Image 1 (tube, helix red, strand yellow):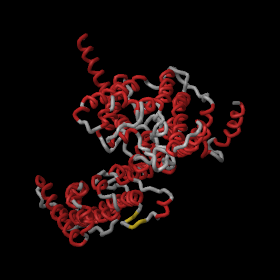
Image 2: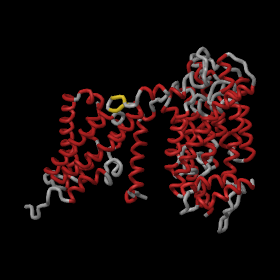
Image 3: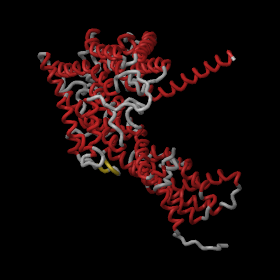
Image 4: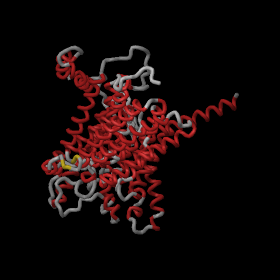
Length: 214
Length: 383
């Protein structure tokens, strides 16, 4: 079957892992998964948990779809993909409810909405349907990391300037507040997440001119 | 003038490309063109409509703001001493206000121009003059007690995200000065609303609520018509005095810098909405805001200021002549709508104008489209 055995970490496979983190980032380049980037980035903790959930669903989903790719009739492939995602999301949701109940409550409906996260569907369609399980797994991991770092960066900025704390711990000292520092309420509003993502896109594209579209 | 020229000429060689201080070229250029009309002329054929360049016409706007600024300074001091129950001379009140307002002006200009010069230098542009106006508008539309660091944060945000990302002066979609105020308003609501912020170092016993806040809360405005026109009541620094704003409007209109259609339609829009709401006031006797006469709406709060200085911003307003009517009318219309019907926002002028800024290109698009259609029809008929 395998005429030419590719090494597990060939340069091509490494690229699958690293490209989505920078030049092919799901949020800043493919512009997928924006909705959850706005919704769960008010605080750092939910953003991290959300990222982990997407990581699990995306990487394992990619592998499962990749294993089944030759058996899925193309006319019903979307439904099959949805079933796989839904099963994984329910698993993640139950685990969260059992072991991280508070965060699960904060994320509320957004865990369930991972099903509709465009990144997952997008990667299934664009990659897992046409590639072997191992590259598909790497692609899933890479995209999930790409998604995660944007989420964490935005949440870091929003929680720090919006509430003066990180992971619920107060960072900005009381003495600051005494001399008149006030938390920025605008940062907590959803539009500010867009500004934060936009700034990341701005920096990324001014450093790497290849990404600029006309 | 010769003296300034000499200084500039001695600096000039050092800031050219490749010289030691080339990082300051944009700053030099800004100063040079500020004091002297540039001697650069177009090389090919040009269409001269006016000898006045952009820096000169921007300065007319700044001059038009001076009456409101001076009055605002006096009023800041006046309100401060009134709240303490002291009577002081006009000069003392003015000097108190002067020292309250001056730092805000300085912070606004230093932060805004600093960022503009940085971007201009980075892009190799010359420094645009747009911020001369914005930098003066900002102090006029904030409460006198706004902490300076908040002003700095908001100005920085507004200049970077409202202006520079779109390409600088003339490219912005929303008015940077209004955006600054919106940022302050949403980021630090406690410093931008309520009854504590409008008077500097207010005595606790004195109610410092603006007439608009009083009306929203369901009581009377608490000021006479004379006070509305003179402007000696609590509010943002430059917005209160109708007289000072009328002088500004006069300067803008006579010089042709401000567009009369925009101004006029804005006030008409406010009157119409005020009239509609006043018409239904009898059905809602509890809402004192509805009882307010339509023309009184134009006199209190920031409506007149918005109508003179904000709506006439040539960059963010509609460009087509018909579009100007629609744009101005809707802005005034929505301003009063927000003011009266939304209890969270006692004043709606800022939000209404920002909202219409976003829609100005759409208005222009449809005006042009309908014009094209009309002409096509005519062309077909004659053919």
